[in-house]
Length: 486
Ligand SMILES: Cc1cc2nc3c(=O)[nH]c(=O)nc-3n(C[C@H](O)[C@H](O)[C@H](O)COP(=O)(O)OP(=O)(O)OC[C@H]3O[C@@H](n4cnc5c(N)ncnc54)[C@H](O)[C@@H]3O)c2cc1C
Image 1 (spheres, rainbow, N blue to C red):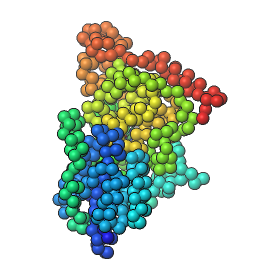
Image 2 (spheres, rainbow, N blue to C red):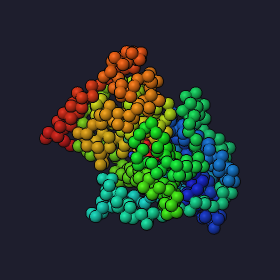
Image 3 (cartoon, rainbow, N blue to C red):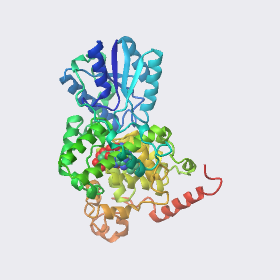
Image 4 (tube, helix red, strand yellow):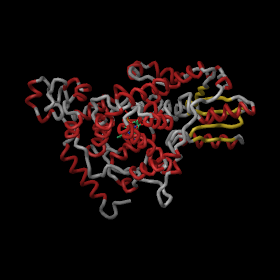
Protein backbone atom coordinates (compact mmCIF):
# COMPACT_ATOMS: atom_id res chain seq x y z
CA UNK A 1 0.00 0.00 0.00
CA UNK A 2 1.06 3.58 -0.61
CA UNK A 3 1.08 6.46 1.86
CA UNK A 4 -0.44 9.86 1.12
CA UNK A 5 1.14 12.92 2.71
CA UNK A 6 -1.38 15.77 2.59
CA UNK A 7 0.12 19.26 2.75
CA UNK A 8 -1.88 22.25 3.99
CA UNK A 9 0.32 25.12 5.16
CA UNK A 10 3.70 23.33 5.20
CA UNK A 11 5.12 24.48 1.87
CA UNK A 12 8.72 23.44 2.39
CA UNK A 13 11.13 20.56 1.82
CA UNK A 14 12.78 20.39 5.26
CA UNK A 15 11.61 19.93 8.88
CA UNK A 16 8.55 17.95 7.78
CA UNK A 17 7.83 14.99 10.12
CA UNK A 18 4.65 13.96 8.27
CA UNK A 19 6.72 13.30 5.16
CA UNK A 20 9.78 11.97 7.01
CA UNK A 21 7.74 9.31 8.70
CA UNK A 22 6.01 8.27 5.46
CA UNK A 23 9.32 8.00 3.62
CA UNK A 24 10.88 6.00 6.46
CA UNK A 25 7.90 3.62 6.43
CA UNK A 26 8.15 3.26 2.67
CA UNK A 27 11.90 2.54 2.88
CA UNK A 28 11.26 -0.20 5.47
CA UNK A 29 8.05 -1.77 4.20
CA UNK A 30 7.89 -0.78 0.55
CA UNK A 31 5.11 1.14 -1.14
CA UNK A 32 5.40 4.60 -2.61
CA UNK A 33 4.67 7.97 -1.05
CA UNK A 34 2.38 10.52 -2.69
CA UNK A 35 2.89 14.12 -1.59
CA UNK A 36 -0.22 16.16 -2.41
CA UNK A 37 -1.82 19.55 -2.02
CA UNK A 38 -5.61 19.65 -2.49
CA UNK A 39 -6.93 22.91 -3.88
CA UNK A 40 -10.64 23.29 -3.22
CA UNK A 41 -11.67 26.82 -4.29
CA UNK A 42 -14.56 26.65 -1.79
CA UNK A 43 -12.12 26.11 1.10
CA UNK A 44 -9.56 28.88 0.93
CA UNK A 45 -8.40 31.63 3.26
CA UNK A 46 -10.20 34.81 2.20
CA UNK A 47 -11.84 33.29 -0.89
CA UNK A 48 -10.71 31.97 -4.25
CA UNK A 49 -9.59 35.47 -5.39
CA UNK A 50 -7.87 36.58 -2.19
CA UNK A 51 -4.29 37.78 -1.82
CA UNK A 52 -3.68 34.70 0.33
CA UNK A 53 -4.87 32.38 -2.47
CA UNK A 54 -2.70 34.24 -4.96
CA UNK A 55 0.32 33.86 -2.69
CA UNK A 56 -0.58 30.19 -2.26
CA UNK A 57 -0.49 29.73 -6.05
CA UNK A 58 3.02 31.18 -6.20
CA UNK A 59 4.13 29.19 -3.17
CA UNK A 60 2.90 25.94 -4.72
CA UNK A 61 4.54 26.69 -8.05
CA UNK A 62 7.84 27.32 -6.32
CA UNK A 63 7.56 24.25 -4.10
CA UNK A 64 6.71 21.88 -6.95
CA UNK A 65 9.78 23.02 -8.91
CA UNK A 66 11.99 22.65 -5.86
CA UNK A 67 10.72 19.16 -5.11
CA UNK A 68 11.22 18.13 -8.73
CA UNK A 69 14.83 19.32 -8.57
CA UNK A 70 15.29 17.11 -5.50
CA UNK A 71 14.05 14.11 -7.51
CA UNK A 72 10.49 13.96 -6.17
CA UNK A 73 7.12 15.35 -7.23
CA UNK A 74 4.15 17.24 -5.81
CA UNK A 75 0.59 16.33 -6.78
CA UNK A 76 -1.75 19.29 -6.93
CA UNK A 77 -5.29 17.97 -6.86
CA UNK A 78 -8.13 20.34 -7.78
CA UNK A 79 -11.82 20.20 -6.88
CA UNK A 80 -14.10 19.40 -3.99
CA UNK A 81 -11.76 18.26 -1.21
CA UNK A 82 -13.73 15.33 0.15
CA UNK A 83 -14.35 13.83 -3.28
CA UNK A 84 -10.80 14.48 -4.49
CA UNK A 85 -9.29 12.87 -1.38
CA UNK A 86 -11.51 9.83 -1.66
CA UNK A 87 -10.73 9.51 -5.38
CA UNK A 88 -7.00 9.57 -4.74
CA UNK A 89 -7.23 7.06 -1.89
CA UNK A 90 -9.16 4.61 -4.06
CA UNK A 91 -7.21 4.97 -7.31
CA UNK A 92 -3.74 5.07 -5.74
CA UNK A 93 -4.07 2.22 -3.23
CA UNK A 94 -3.50 4.51 -0.26
CA UNK A 95 -3.16 2.66 3.05
CA UNK A 96 -2.55 5.67 5.33
CA UNK A 97 -2.84 9.45 5.19
CA UNK A 98 -0.36 11.67 7.03
CA UNK A 99 -1.12 15.34 7.62
CA UNK A 100 0.06 18.19 9.79
CA UNK A 101 -2.57 19.68 12.10
CA UNK A 102 -3.58 23.28 11.33
CA UNK A 103 -5.97 25.30 13.50
CA UNK A 104 -9.00 27.27 12.32
CA UNK A 105 -11.10 27.32 9.18
CA UNK A 106 -10.94 26.18 6.44
CA UNK A 107 -8.47 23.65 7.85
CA UNK A 108 -10.70 22.33 10.65
CA UNK A 109 -13.45 21.40 8.21
CA UNK A 110 -11.04 19.71 5.82
CA UNK A 111 -9.41 17.78 8.66
CA UNK A 112 -12.85 16.59 9.77
CA UNK A 113 -13.69 15.60 6.18
CA UNK A 114 -10.40 13.70 5.93
CA UNK A 115 -11.33 11.78 9.08
CA UNK A 116 -14.72 10.86 7.60
CA UNK A 117 -13.16 9.71 4.32
CA UNK A 118 -10.41 7.70 6.02
CA UNK A 119 -12.92 6.00 8.34
CA UNK A 120 -15.16 5.19 5.38
CA UNK A 121 -12.21 3.63 3.57
CA UNK A 122 -10.92 1.95 6.73
CA UNK A 123 -7.46 3.49 6.52
CA UNK A 124 -5.36 5.30 9.11
CA UNK A 125 -5.27 9.09 9.36
CA UNK A 126 -2.13 10.17 11.17
CA UNK A 127 -1.82 13.78 12.45
CA UNK A 128 1.50 15.47 13.18
CA UNK A 129 1.87 18.52 15.43
CA UNK A 130 5.01 20.09 14.07
CA UNK A 131 3.62 23.61 13.42
CA UNK A 132 3.71 24.72 17.04
CA UNK A 133 6.50 25.00 19.58
CA UNK A 134 4.77 22.67 22.03
CA UNK A 135 1.64 20.51 21.65
CA UNK A 136 -1.34 22.74 22.58
CA UNK A 137 -2.50 20.44 25.37
CA UNK A 138 0.83 20.55 27.15
CA UNK A 139 0.73 24.18 28.34
CA UNK A 140 -1.98 24.36 31.02
CA UNK A 141 -2.43 26.34 34.23
CA UNK A 142 -2.38 24.98 37.80
CA UNK A 143 -6.00 23.84 37.45
CA UNK A 144 -5.22 21.95 34.25
CA UNK A 145 -7.08 24.57 32.19
CA UNK A 146 -5.85 26.51 29.15
CA UNK A 147 -4.44 29.98 29.67
CA UNK A 148 -6.55 32.88 28.47
CA UNK A 149 -3.99 35.63 29.15
CA UNK A 150 -0.77 35.97 27.19
CA UNK A 151 1.85 36.74 29.85
CA UNK A 152 1.20 33.67 32.06
CA UNK A 153 1.06 31.57 28.89
CA UNK A 154 4.39 33.02 27.79
CA UNK A 155 5.96 32.31 31.19
CA UNK A 156 4.59 28.75 31.26
CA UNK A 157 5.94 28.13 27.77
CA UNK A 158 9.33 29.53 28.73
CA UNK A 159 9.39 27.28 31.80
CA UNK A 160 8.91 24.29 29.51
CA UNK A 161 11.25 25.51 26.79
CA UNK A 162 13.56 22.52 27.28
CA UNK A 163 10.72 20.33 25.95
CA UNK A 164 10.61 22.11 22.59
CA UNK A 165 11.85 19.36 20.31
CA UNK A 166 14.01 20.28 17.33
CA UNK A 167 12.82 18.74 14.06
CA UNK A 168 15.09 16.77 11.75
CA UNK A 169 16.02 18.93 8.81
CA UNK A 170 16.35 16.24 6.12
CA UNK A 171 13.18 14.44 5.08
CA UNK A 172 14.58 11.31 3.42
CA UNK A 173 14.82 9.81 -0.04
CA UNK A 174 12.86 12.05 -2.42
CA UNK A 175 12.96 9.44 -5.18
CA UNK A 176 10.42 7.38 -3.22
CA UNK A 177 7.81 10.01 -4.08
CA UNK A 178 5.49 8.86 -6.82
CA UNK A 179 5.44 11.17 -9.90
CA UNK A 180 2.16 13.02 -10.29
CA UNK A 181 -0.50 11.86 -12.74
CA UNK A 182 -0.75 14.28 -15.70
CA UNK A 183 -3.99 15.82 -14.35
CA UNK A 184 -2.25 16.65 -11.06
CA UNK A 185 1.06 17.82 -12.42
CA UNK A 186 -0.10 21.28 -13.46
CA UNK A 187 -1.44 24.10 -11.33
CA UNK A 188 -5.28 24.13 -11.31
CA UNK A 189 -6.71 26.45 -13.95
CA UNK A 190 -8.35 28.72 -11.38
CA UNK A 191 -4.96 29.39 -9.75
CA UNK A 192 -3.27 29.91 -13.10
CA UNK A 193 -5.96 32.43 -14.09
CA UNK A 194 -5.59 34.23 -10.76
CA UNK A 195 -1.83 34.58 -11.26
CA UNK A 196 -2.42 36.13 -14.67
CA UNK A 197 -4.69 38.93 -13.44
CA UNK A 198 -3.01 42.32 -14.04
CA UNK A 199 -3.56 43.37 -10.39
CA UNK A 200 -2.09 40.09 -9.21
CA UNK A 201 1.19 40.70 -10.96
CA UNK A 202 1.48 44.16 -9.37
CA UNK A 203 0.62 42.81 -5.94
CA UNK A 204 3.34 40.15 -6.17
CA UNK A 205 5.98 42.66 -7.25
CA UNK A 206 7.81 42.67 -3.90
CA UNK A 207 6.95 39.16 -2.77
CA UNK A 208 9.44 36.30 -3.13
CA UNK A 209 7.85 32.94 -2.34
CA UNK A 210 9.69 29.92 -1.03
CA UNK A 211 11.74 28.59 1.83
CA UNK A 212 15.13 29.65 0.48
CA UNK A 213 14.20 33.33 0.37
CA UNK A 214 12.54 33.04 3.78
CA UNK A 215 15.62 31.55 5.44
CA UNK A 216 17.85 34.16 3.78
CA UNK A 217 15.56 36.91 5.09
CA UNK A 218 15.61 35.46 8.60
CA UNK A 219 19.40 35.22 8.59
CA UNK A 220 19.78 38.78 7.33
CA UNK A 221 17.24 40.06 9.83
CA UNK A 222 19.00 38.26 12.71
CA UNK A 223 22.36 39.71 11.77
CA UNK A 224 21.37 43.23 10.76
CA UNK A 225 18.10 44.29 12.40
CA UNK A 226 17.27 42.15 15.38
CA UNK A 227 19.33 44.20 17.83
CA UNK A 228 17.09 47.23 17.20
CA UNK A 229 13.85 45.28 16.94
CA UNK A 230 12.47 46.09 20.41
CA UNK A 231 13.15 49.81 20.01
CA UNK A 232 12.06 50.23 16.41
CA UNK A 233 9.31 47.69 15.77
CA UNK A 234 6.48 50.15 16.35
CA UNK A 235 7.56 52.69 13.75
CA UNK A 236 5.86 51.88 10.45
CA UNK A 237 8.18 53.98 8.29
CA UNK A 238 11.17 51.83 9.30
CA UNK A 239 11.95 48.39 7.85
CA UNK A 240 12.46 47.22 11.45
CA UNK A 241 10.39 44.03 11.56
CA UNK A 242 11.16 40.71 9.91
CA UNK A 243 8.33 40.60 7.33
CA UNK A 244 8.31 36.84 7.87
CA UNK A 245 4.64 36.39 8.76
CA UNK A 246 3.80 35.26 5.22
CA UNK A 247 6.50 32.58 5.20
CA UNK A 248 5.42 31.48 8.68
CA UNK A 249 1.77 31.31 7.62
CA UNK A 250 2.54 29.15 4.58
CA UNK A 251 4.96 27.00 6.52
CA UNK A 252 7.85 27.96 4.26
CA UNK A 253 9.49 28.52 7.62
CA UNK A 254 8.71 26.08 10.39
CA UNK A 255 8.28 27.81 13.73
CA UNK A 256 10.26 25.22 15.69
CA UNK A 257 13.13 25.31 13.20
CA UNK A 258 13.20 29.10 13.48
CA UNK A 259 13.11 28.96 17.28
CA UNK A 260 15.95 26.43 17.49
CA UNK A 261 18.00 28.34 14.92
CA UNK A 262 17.78 31.52 16.98
CA UNK A 263 18.57 29.78 20.26
CA UNK A 264 21.68 28.25 18.69
CA UNK A 265 22.65 31.63 17.31
CA UNK A 266 22.17 33.21 20.75
CA UNK A 267 24.37 30.55 22.36
CA UNK A 268 27.07 31.14 19.75
CA UNK A 269 26.86 34.90 20.37
CA UNK A 270 25.78 35.43 16.76
CA UNK A 271 22.76 37.59 17.53
CA UNK A 272 21.82 40.30 19.99
CA UNK A 273 20.12 38.36 22.78
CA UNK A 274 17.80 41.19 23.91
CA UNK A 275 16.61 41.73 20.35
CA UNK A 276 16.12 38.06 19.64
CA UNK A 277 14.23 37.54 22.92
CA UNK A 278 11.89 40.39 21.98
CA UNK A 279 11.34 38.87 18.53
CA UNK A 280 10.81 35.36 19.91
CA UNK A 281 8.20 36.82 22.26
CA UNK A 282 6.23 37.90 19.17
CA UNK A 283 6.60 34.40 17.79
CA UNK A 284 5.00 33.19 21.02
CA UNK A 285 2.03 35.52 20.32
CA UNK A 286 1.61 33.48 17.13
CA UNK A 287 1.80 30.29 19.20
CA UNK A 288 -0.80 31.72 21.60
CA UNK A 289 -3.20 32.49 18.73
CA UNK A 290 -2.99 28.90 17.49
CA UNK A 291 -3.33 27.57 21.04
CA UNK A 292 -6.51 29.61 21.51
CA UNK A 293 -8.11 28.17 18.37
CA UNK A 294 -7.24 24.68 19.52
CA UNK A 295 -8.92 25.23 22.92
CA UNK A 296 -11.72 27.54 21.73
CA UNK A 297 -12.29 26.91 17.99
CA UNK A 298 -15.47 29.04 18.02
CA UNK A 299 -13.36 32.14 18.71
CA UNK A 300 -12.34 32.41 15.07
CA UNK A 301 -15.79 33.86 14.33
CA UNK A 302 -17.43 34.56 17.70
CA UNK A 303 -16.32 36.82 20.57
CA UNK A 304 -14.05 34.95 22.95
CA UNK A 305 -15.80 36.82 25.78
CA UNK A 306 -19.40 35.82 25.24
CA UNK A 307 -20.82 39.01 26.79
CA UNK A 308 -19.71 40.85 23.65
CA UNK A 309 -22.14 38.82 21.54
CA UNK A 310 -24.69 41.46 22.61
CA UNK A 311 -22.63 44.36 21.23
CA UNK A 312 -24.95 46.61 19.18
CA UNK A 313 -22.84 47.04 16.03
CA UNK A 314 -23.88 49.41 13.24
CA UNK A 315 -23.98 48.27 9.64
CA UNK A 316 -22.74 51.26 7.69
CA UNK A 317 -21.79 50.15 4.18
CA UNK A 318 -20.57 53.62 3.19
CA UNK A 319 -18.27 53.93 6.22
CA UNK A 320 -16.91 50.45 5.57
CA UNK A 321 -16.16 51.32 1.97
CA UNK A 322 -14.33 54.53 2.97
CA UNK A 323 -12.28 52.47 5.40
CA UNK A 324 -11.51 49.73 2.86
CA UNK A 325 -10.43 52.27 0.24
CA UNK A 326 -8.28 54.36 2.58
CA UNK A 327 -10.64 57.34 2.33
CA UNK A 328 -11.58 57.96 5.96
CA UNK A 329 -9.82 61.33 6.14
CA UNK A 330 -7.62 60.07 9.03
CA UNK A 331 -4.19 59.92 7.36
CA UNK A 332 -2.49 57.16 9.37
CA UNK A 333 -5.51 54.90 8.86
CA UNK A 334 -5.77 55.67 5.15
CA UNK A 335 -2.02 55.12 4.70
CA UNK A 336 -2.35 51.67 6.28
CA UNK A 337 -5.38 50.69 4.22
CA UNK A 338 -3.69 51.76 1.00
CA UNK A 339 -0.49 49.95 1.93
CA UNK A 340 -2.62 46.86 2.44
CA UNK A 341 -4.40 47.18 -0.91
CA UNK A 342 -1.22 47.85 -2.87
CA UNK A 343 1.16 45.41 -1.18
CA UNK A 344 -0.90 42.72 0.61
CA UNK A 345 0.66 43.64 3.93
CA UNK A 346 0.43 46.21 6.70
CA UNK A 347 2.59 47.14 9.67
CA UNK A 348 1.40 45.73 13.03
CA UNK A 349 0.99 49.08 14.77
CA UNK A 350 -1.08 50.38 11.87
CA UNK A 351 -3.18 47.16 11.86
CA UNK A 352 -4.11 48.03 15.44
CA UNK A 353 -5.02 51.61 14.51
CA UNK A 354 -7.18 50.77 11.50
CA UNK A 355 -8.92 48.02 13.48
CA UNK A 356 -9.59 50.37 16.38
CA UNK A 357 -11.10 53.03 14.11
CA UNK A 358 -13.36 50.48 12.42
CA UNK A 359 -14.61 48.74 15.55
CA UNK A 360 -14.61 51.48 18.17
CA UNK A 361 -15.07 54.80 16.35
CA UNK A 362 -17.13 53.55 13.40
CA UNK A 363 -18.79 50.79 15.48
CA UNK A 364 -18.55 48.16 12.76
CA UNK A 365 -18.42 44.51 13.75
CA UNK A 366 -14.82 43.21 14.00
CA UNK A 367 -15.89 40.30 11.77
CA UNK A 368 -16.23 42.70 8.84
CA UNK A 369 -12.67 43.93 9.33
CA UNK A 370 -11.40 40.39 9.82
CA UNK A 371 -13.04 39.37 6.53
CA UNK A 372 -11.41 42.30 4.69
CA UNK A 373 -8.00 41.37 6.11
CA UNK A 374 -8.62 37.73 5.13
CA UNK A 375 -9.27 38.90 1.58
CA UNK A 376 -6.40 41.37 1.26
CA UNK A 377 -3.49 40.18 3.43
CA UNK A 378 -0.87 37.79 2.10
CA UNK A 379 -0.34 36.59 5.68
CA UNK A 380 -4.10 36.26 6.40
CA UNK A 381 -4.09 33.63 9.08
CA UNK A 382 -7.14 32.10 10.80
CA UNK A 383 -5.52 32.25 14.24
CA UNK A 384 -3.53 35.50 14.14
CA UNK A 385 -6.24 37.45 12.36
CA UNK A 386 -9.04 36.43 14.73
CA UNK A 387 -6.88 37.09 17.79
CA UNK A 388 -5.67 40.46 16.43
CA UNK A 389 -9.19 41.70 15.68
CA UNK A 390 -10.65 40.50 18.94
CA UNK A 391 -7.75 42.01 20.85
CA UNK A 392 -8.40 45.42 19.34
CA UNK A 393 -12.20 45.19 19.53
CA UNK A 394 -11.86 44.34 23.22
CA UNK A 395 -13.77 41.06 23.12
CA UNK A 396 -10.85 38.64 22.88
CA UNK A 397 -8.43 37.13 25.32
CA UNK A 398 -6.12 39.49 27.10
CA UNK A 399 -7.76 42.16 24.99
CA UNK A 400 -7.16 45.84 24.88
CA UNK A 401 -9.94 46.91 27.31
CA UNK A 402 -13.17 48.07 25.68
CA UNK A 403 -12.73 51.55 27.28
CA UNK A 404 -9.30 52.07 25.70
CA UNK A 405 -9.52 53.54 22.21
CA UNK A 406 -6.46 54.38 20.21
CA UNK A 407 -6.42 58.03 19.27
CA UNK A 408 -5.10 57.64 15.71
CA UNK A 409 -3.83 61.21 15.55
CA UNK A 410 -1.79 60.93 18.76
CA UNK A 411 -0.53 57.51 17.69
CA UNK A 412 0.42 58.91 14.32
CA UNK A 413 2.37 61.77 15.89
CA UNK A 414 4.13 59.33 18.22
CA UNK A 415 5.03 56.54 15.81
CA UNK A 416 5.29 58.42 12.50
CA UNK A 417 6.55 61.71 13.88
CA UNK A 418 7.80 63.17 10.59
CA UNK A 419 4.91 61.71 8.60
CA UNK A 420 7.21 59.63 6.38
CA UNK A 421 4.92 56.60 6.40
CA UNK A 422 1.87 58.71 5.58
CA UNK A 423 3.68 60.45 2.72
CA UNK A 424 4.68 57.08 1.26
CA UNK A 425 1.06 55.97 0.84
CA UNK A 426 -0.86 59.27 0.53
CA UNK A 427 0.81 61.20 -2.28
CA UNK A 428 -1.89 63.87 -2.09
CA UNK A 429 -0.56 64.89 1.37
CA UNK A 430 3.12 64.69 0.45
CA UNK A 431 3.68 68.44 0.63
CA UNK A 432 2.22 68.87 4.12
CA UNK A 433 4.54 69.55 7.05
CA UNK A 434 5.08 67.12 9.92
CA UNK A 435 2.80 69.39 11.96
CA UNK A 436 -0.13 69.25 9.56
CA UNK A 437 0.09 65.80 8.05
CA UNK A 438 -1.39 63.82 10.97
CA UNK A 439 -4.62 65.87 11.14
CA UNK A 440 -4.87 68.10 8.05
CA UNK A 441 -8.35 69.37 9.03
CA UNK A 442 -6.73 71.12 12.03
CA UNK A 443 -4.45 73.11 9.67
CA UNK A 444 -6.74 74.45 6.93
CA UNK A 445 -4.42 77.36 6.18
CA UNK A 446 -1.41 75.19 5.49
CA UNK A 447 -3.56 72.85 3.39
CA UNK A 448 -4.72 75.83 1.34
CA UNK A 449 -1.17 77.17 0.91
CA UNK A 450 0.14 73.74 -0.16
CA UNK A 451 -2.71 73.18 -2.59
CA UNK A 452 -4.46 70.40 -0.67
CA UNK A 453 -8.22 70.97 -1.01
CA UNK A 454 -9.81 69.17 1.93
CA UNK A 455 -12.95 67.37 0.84
CA UNK A 456 -11.68 67.41 -2.78
CA UNK A 457 -8.07 66.17 -2.95
CA UNK A 458 -8.28 64.40 0.39
CA UNK A 459 -11.43 63.70 2.43
CA UNK A 460 -12.44 65.42 5.62
CA UNK A 461 -12.68 62.89 8.48
CA UNK A 462 -15.74 60.68 8.08
CA UNK A 463 -16.06 60.46 11.85
CA UNK A 464 -15.57 62.86 14.75
CA UNK A 465 -12.96 61.14 16.87
CA UNK A 466 -14.02 62.66 20.21
CA UNK A 467 -17.77 62.20 19.74
CA UNK A 468 -17.40 58.64 18.46
CA UNK A 469 -15.16 57.80 21.40
CA UNK A 470 -17.83 59.01 23.82
CA UNK A 471 -20.52 57.09 21.92
CA UNK A 472 -18.44 53.91 22.07
CA UNK A 473 -18.00 54.22 25.83
CA UNK A 474 -21.73 54.79 26.27
CA UNK A 475 -22.54 51.70 24.23
CA UNK A 476 -20.31 49.45 26.27
CA UNK A 477 -21.56 50.96 29.54
CA UNK A 478 -25.14 50.29 28.43
CA UNK A 479 -24.21 46.67 27.71
CA UNK A 480 -23.30 46.32 31.36
CA UNK A 481 -26.80 47.12 32.64
CA UNK A 482 -28.61 44.02 33.92
CA UNK A 483 -30.44 42.19 31.19
CA UNK A 484 -28.05 43.35 28.51
CA UNK A 485 -25.24 40.97 29.39
CA UNK A 486 -25.15 37.50 27.94
C1 LIG B 1 -6.09 43.43 13.63
C2 LIG B 1 -4.87 42.56 13.42
C3 LIG B 1 -4.90 41.55 12.50
C4 LIG B 1 -3.77 40.73 12.30
N1 LIG B 1 -3.85 39.73 11.38
C5 LIG B 1 -2.77 38.92 11.19
C6 LIG B 1 -2.82 37.87 10.23
O1 LIG B 1 -3.83 37.62 9.57
N2 LIG B 1 -1.69 37.11 10.07
C7 LIG B 1 -0.55 37.33 10.80
O2 LIG B 1 0.44 36.61 10.61
N3 LIG B 1 -0.51 38.30 11.72
C8 LIG B 1 -1.56 39.10 11.94
N4 LIG B 1 -1.48 40.11 12.87
C9 LIG B 1 -0.28 40.21 13.73
C10 LIG B 1 0.85 41.10 13.21
O3 LIG B 1 0.34 42.34 12.78
C11 LIG B 1 1.65 40.47 12.08
O4 LIG B 1 2.02 39.15 12.43
C12 LIG B 1 2.94 41.27 11.82
O5 LIG B 1 2.59 42.59 11.43
C13 LIG B 1 3.75 40.61 10.73
O6 LIG B 1 4.89 41.36 10.44
P1 LIG B 1 6.35 40.77 10.67
O7 LIG B 1 6.43 39.41 10.10
O8 LIG B 1 7.31 41.80 10.21
O9 LIG B 1 6.36 40.63 12.26
P2 LIG B 1 7.57 40.64 13.31
O10 LIG B 1 7.38 41.84 14.16
O11 LIG B 1 8.87 40.44 12.68
O12 LIG B 1 7.19 39.39 14.24
C14 LIG B 1 7.69 38.07 14.00
C15 LIG B 1 6.56 37.09 13.84
O13 LIG B 1 5.81 36.96 15.05
C16 LIG B 1 4.44 36.78 14.76
N5 LIG B 1 3.69 37.92 15.32
C17 LIG B 1 4.12 39.18 15.46
N6 LIG B 1 3.17 39.94 16.05
C18 LIG B 1 2.12 39.12 16.26
C19 LIG B 1 0.84 39.30 16.84
N7 LIG B 1 0.43 40.47 17.33
N8 LIG B 1 0.01 38.25 16.88
C20 LIG B 1 0.38 37.04 16.42
N9 LIG B 1 1.59 36.80 15.87
C21 LIG B 1 2.45 37.83 15.80
C22 LIG B 1 4.30 36.76 13.24
O14 LIG B 1 4.30 35.42 12.80
C23 LIG B 1 5.54 37.51 12.79
O15 LIG B 1 5.96 37.16 11.51
C24 LIG B 1 -2.61 40.95 13.08
C25 LIG B 1 -2.59 41.99 14.01
C26 LIG B 1 -3.70 42.79 14.18
C27 LIG B 1 -3.64 43.91 15.18
